[in-house]
Image 1 (cartoon, rainbow, N blue to C red):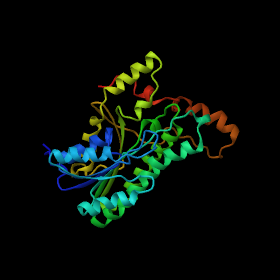
Image 2 (image 1 turned 120 degrees about the vertical axis):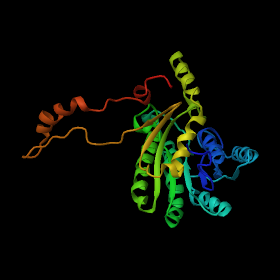
Image 3 (image 1 turned 90 degrees about the horizontal axis):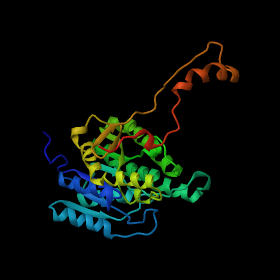
Image 4 (image 1 turned 120 degrees about the horizontal axis):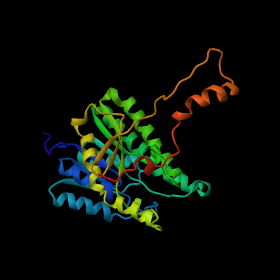
Length: 304
């Protein structure tokens, strides 16, 4: 039986922790003994503006419950090193990092602007790199550390109108895997979590039809707090042998996700030509091709 002090004396940075999933992770980390840096720029769903109140309110909630926390208002897209430095300055070290901060700029691809693409990549993918890179130096020096990065089935599987978000989230999966490989020799772990939960970002889903309203109602039942238990576990020493993995959390379900591996293989001793690819390879692999599916097509059952 794992005690509730699973993160006792560890220092954890959680980005985007002022609301929703990030808040759930930050408050649970503190409840399990961690000293928490609550990072949140306080911008809108699309990344505009800034507001210090959300982060400060989470810090106050943690302290009122007997925990330790400080607020940080940095932008992950530009201030990754400064965010990590807050942990070092306030608590003397960093043991865990949760890359949760994000924005949405949804648009059907042929209408998506370069700015809409760049801004989402900057926060999700570049932001995850910025904080992870800053933390990596400290993790290497102390010979320990754990990172949890938020990916999405939008990138792992697919969704309409989210080419920018999907590219960033699939990029994060690759980033996490590379960190796990590069840092394993220093006892540093890196994993991804793909959350299904109602949040401000999901709140931008249209609800014009009855089917859309039913879909949103099901998502609303999946509260942000359901994501935190897996994240706390992955940050803890209990998960010391788990790295380079991708998990999905859907209400009370936890899924271990597959990662790309060869599905079919054909070879020819004389080499391939375009004609032989058309005649031999294409018919052989046709039944094994990945369907053009969305996240909702793959996770087709109601949340448990």
